[in-house]
Amino acid sequence: MPRVVVDVMPKPEILDPQGKAVLGALPRLGFSGVTDVRQGKRFELEVVGEVTPAVLAEVEKMAGTLLSNPVIENFAVHVEESE
Amino acid sequence: MPRVVVDVMPKPEILDPQGKAVLGALPRLGFSGVTDVRQGKRFELEVVGEVTPAVLAEVEKMAGTLLSNPVIENFAVHVEESE
Image (cartoon, rainbow over all chains, first blue to last red; front, side, top):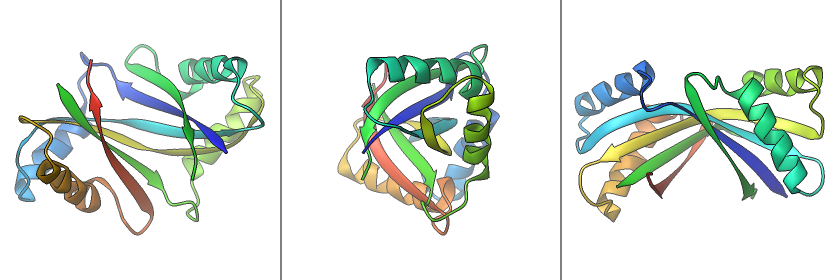
């Protein structure tokens, strides 16, 4: 069954305190080599029937109104085969 | 520059109140056709140099210890070309 995924990330110019907290914790846990971390959200939506272009357009609208804040976040919609 | 992405999702058997809240809000906003929503986290990591199998193994370790709670969450690591 296909599944529609919406990835929501803070815009590059927006401060991301959660990502910074993770970045700061990595060396303390013995990890090195990571220069930046950004934390965002991932939504997995199960839809009825086929994922048509109309369904994707509908999900784009959901992503822009409910799932993300377009002032501070970017989103990307794509389809994934679910296991 | 390549970027390593870690997707963290609640396990299927774990209740996901955030996803349920989104699912409940969709019809009120005039959206239909979505039968389930799961909400998780997405981390984008910038790493130094090439993304070698060793780097990916290191990121898998980070994902399992710092970025996710393996009791209630699954994670997936993959590489993406950043824009």
